[in-house]
Amino acid sequence: MWVPRSAAAAVAMLLSLLAFGVDPRVSQGIVVNVDVNVGLLGFSGEGAWQFELNARELHSLLELLLPERRPSCGPEATPMGVTYKLNYNVVLMQTGLARLQHTLATAMRPAHADERGVYDVEASAIEEHFDMLYASYFTPHDQPEGAEGPAAYTILVINPNKGDMAQLADIPPAFGYRYRYNGGAPSQMWLSARRYLVLDVSAGPCSLGMSHAAGGAVSAASVPQVHAALQGGVAGLKAREADVAAASSHALYHNHFMAQLGALLLSAVRHVIAADLHACALPDFDELVVPLLTRTPALTRTLTCSTLALALALALALALTPTPTPTLTRSCRCSPCATTRSSTR
Image 1: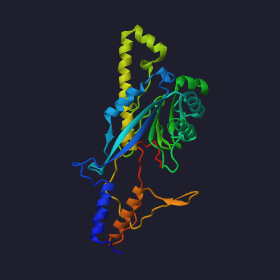
Image 2 (image 1 turned 60 degrees about the vertical axis):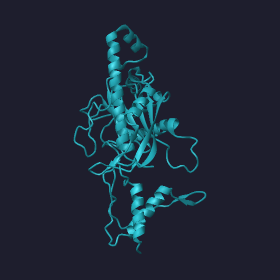
Image 3 (image 1 turned 45 degrees about the horizontal axis):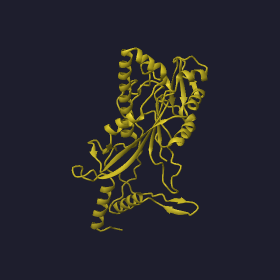
Image 4 (image 1 turned 180 degrees about the vertical axis):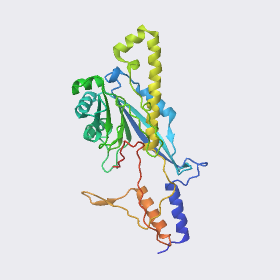
């Protein structure tokens, strides 16, 4: 069956609008609102070094540095016809640190024999605890029936107190720990099976590289570390009041920590939440499979309008192809680090 030339033009225009055919010099294209939650646990004076972080300050920094993002595609970084308007929500999580520290201390296992004082935490084994922590703060409980997926992306930044964990695990206080997902490479960051990322500033430091990037893309200094110069609480306040140099040093390291954390969070937005595409063109194929989701109890087959429009456009484009081409299978990696796992729900 052949489709008239006029239909071919309509298909091309539809694909352009859905993908990346809008002229970047004329318009931003389609504007999509994306909510990004940043949860801060252990930054209210109860975490490592009683460090305190101002949620409003971090929110203002993120809004200033990256209020919106227009992804690109292909080796020439061609701007796509969509712009993500980023709405940040920074939350100081006041409860849950004590239980998390107990979970981490219980899950720690000694690393290799040549790495004394270093412990591994299997992230997949404690992921359920992070799921509950994430759900208690960010999962919308009043989400209407039939709504698809979570309302936002979330980045959980945690600052456990290693002194408390050492007591719980009955190990010397001078220790280090890192995460492994399903026995993978060690990391301070990992991507969960749900729609959130975890960043632990007390873990590590770890030196690894980005997938498909040169070695050293992620160094030990890429993730901010909380140390004695950032001492908070009553002890830190007294030290700063008694010593001008201590106050100046605290302000300097605080600004440095904020800059590192802000850069890391925006890197997560660029590489995971609103990532660029490796190619600007769809691969050739001779078969298109469109799954229809059956919902109970109404047993109604539904597809979102955008998915249906894209499926119809691809089907028409296929009909315009006079000769069949081999089916191509392409895999896609969304996670920015070799130590994380990409999953879609």
